Length: 317
Ligand code: 13P
Ligand code: SF4
Image 1 (spheres, rainbow, N blue to C red):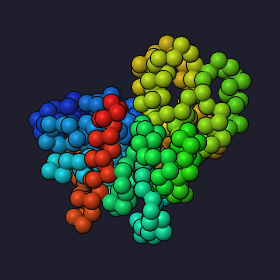
Image 2: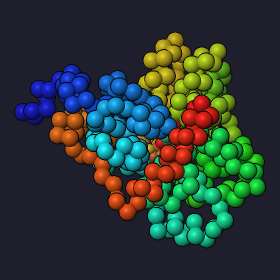
Image 3: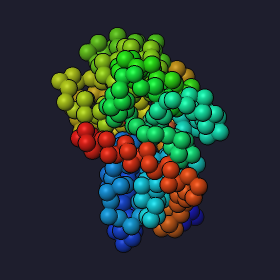
Image 4: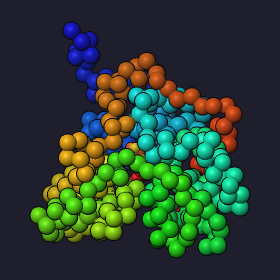
């Protein structure tokens, strides 16, 4: 008999978290049961802000590795747990530190802006980090003629260039989930639901963004759907966000945008979904797996994150 079958994970997680003064932070792309048990759910920016401000001794980051690593960089004295250390990110993996250093060296007079979806090694080569919530405001905080490298997401970079009138040099990376949405299938859904608005994350391809009614980070999509008079939405981002959307607006219809390949659940991030309630329970109980940092880069890597948090605070984000 699997011993795990006898455990009421939800109540045990709550109990141990209280005993150990641990806070459970979850991204909107987590499985529903993890979102339900978390102390806070939010987007990448909110997770970094909660981590920075928490008084807890332990942070359990239910998300992917770069999110937990960001929390650890901000709180090096705290224990930061990640339920499954294989929860990586295809976008973060698309920037190899050695190649990225050569790219930065080839553009010596450029400011380096990196998306938070990067490893600490890339952050250590970065001037300021952004998330999808604050990217536009942070890019705009630089003079229009300032030369900028933006990494690693080419779709977000192209989108930012188009809305800020810049010509940032882009690293050629992408997220395997957001690249998968099917234009044909979304247009077909629009015929079935003519009143539905299309809400898209800026990591989606340009063609998807071009038919979208609203583009924003996960929290921005959530807020838009909450405040909109529309009743139906086709949502082009990881489908985990629909859990909170349906909770907040139970009377509205939320339809996940379909991926190109109908045989897979490609609008779910396979990395995010590696975390389960069972793994959350065991990592909290055993205080492992936990995040460690490379001593040679940690002090440099936190600087652009702190800059981002300061600018966001100044902007009221
Ligand atoms: P958010 O900034 O909306 O949290 O996006 C994070 C992410 O990983 C998108 O794929
Ligand atoms: Fe990374 Fe994409 Fe998963 Fe977000 S959805 S964590 S960008 S792989």
